[in-house]
Image (cartoon, rainbow, N blue to C red; front, side, top):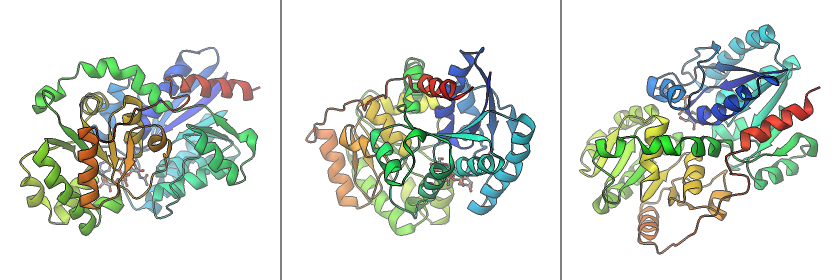
Length: 367
Ligand code: UD1
């Protein structure tokens, strides 16, 4: 029996861990899965609703760390996770993605000599001002097994001197969740409730500090939006960090003045899937949404200067446009008018079976 602690902390973790835990429960003779929630995200619509939507079992342990500076948040996760590992004595701890909870829990494990696997390893933006890039680099240095979503990730790890036997190319586990939930998402009434869906509409999400914490950058994005909303409605589910900065930076009036901009609270997994899967265009600074739109063939504009997911540009529908208003508006028009006709291809192993491959590896390496 392989006892595994699966760590979740923030919103983008839930859809990566849910298929892994479900796959473990489907092999009860082999796996004993536990779920630990660090509490990095805690609002009902940033956390609880995802447990419901994804049928993720309630956490066996909740560390309730909440928000704080990077140092405080990371330290608190470490302090509260260590006794859980000591108590449970797992064979493996799985951490996913690149949030502060990921590096914090990986660091606890490696110091205790407990084996840790990193799911979604090897992605690199090469932008060390992103907190996530530091989390990715350090987690990959210390984890025992690195489960990668794409071959560019394998190449990055090799270039950093990671031994071959630690690297396992398994595909993209988030796409497992997408496949498992698309049918259920289609039953959501969110589009009708928002009054979109009969004609073209776009969806936008923004939460990167580099975009929403700086007034000039945020204003450039709003300028682009003022133009795009002339052509079609844009639905904007607002991350709590972004809601706060809109108010703090004095941008509320400008946001409210856009008649065709639907500003709403963050959506749950199924409602958001329903919303973007029916959209004509997605504008985002999220990593995961670049991948999900690629999997569904929806045009995506990434409002950043770089991406740690180059495969979504090479094979998928993603274009990295940055935050220059003219570039955003032109790229939006090109995507919508089909001038940039791009047939999305599915990256290798984004096939809905990644969780099973992760379990196969864990079985193979466990005595
Ligand atoms: C975190 C991750 C980021 C991920 C994002 C997805 C890190 C370094 N960042 O960023 O990689 O893409 O989650 O959402 O781990 N807040 C609430 N309610 C919540 C959670 C947060 O109101 O449930 C507010 C708090 O004011 C908090 C702020 O949002 O201070 C930022 O939260 P935090 O977890 O620090 O980072 P995110 O911006 O969410």
